Length: 308
Ligand SMILES: Nc1ncnc2c1ncn2[C@@H]1O[C@H](COP(=O)(O)OP(=O)(O)O)[C@@H](O)[C@H]1O
Ligand SMILES: O=C(O)C[C@@H](O)[C@H](O)C(=O)COP(=O)(O)O
Image (cartoon, rainbow, N blue to C red; front, side):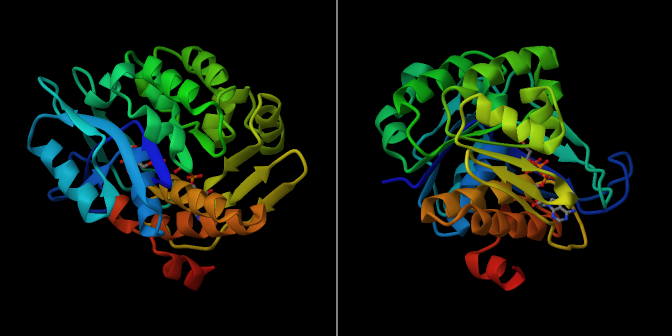
């Protein structure tokens, strides 16, 4: 049985090996597996979970790299298919610590992962997985949007069904469109997790407590508000827990949210108390903020505990 099944974006992160310079000046790059829900599957696998991802690549060498990389991290790639005629996306970034890491997505003319189709979903695995994780970006275009709602219908809101509020404005016509889709999606999930920009799109407020409360009112059982270098807030109907940040010298903040996500999965599946889960995820996020890459940087349980 799969512990953590994620669905959505995949790509190749082509990240500069020089820090503090623009893409105009960068000379060398590293090539890494990327895409937020894919990174979450990698992070969970590093923590010992049996993980898999539902996504699509181009029928090209970068697509083959995605399969190689997934397998090398111990992530099941059985649900990764290719789409003829669309290239596997690449993502560049600039690395300007401590808090400026702009992303440049090349997902043209369309990303294969937005061509995930409802009739091709591994429905019984989606129903059976101990945790199912999807992201708001998957709702930005068809047929992926219909596929996500089909997956949630099959899942029947079984715990743990997680929505990563992951909002990248570049993938949407307007924040209004995204808000409309997120509101519909929240009724299908048991956990919502997002940073301040993302909870603002979902709830209309970026005040962490008000946003957490609004997410609970929208139907989730656990709301998690990530606040970068300010730590994290978790809320359920009976508990409100704020965890301060773990101190770290930030190298590249990208990937921290996905490390946090994989660790959140681990804590939820272990049945840990909320505070322990949030502290563990907080530490995993900080560790990756202190490293250059995303997928290859995901920590093991021992590494997290050594910092916690
Ligand atoms: N500068 C930082 N210092 C300490 N912890 C951090 C830092 N940046 C991120 N983290 C940890 O990683 C989590 C996710 O990072 P955040 O930037 O909020 O999410 P996202 O990457 O999704 O925007 C934070 O809640 C925190 O636990
Ligand atoms: O999500 C993407 O498509 C790009 C990612 O591969 C990249 O590593 C990243 O930005 C991770 O996002 P975060 O964990 O939410 O910071």
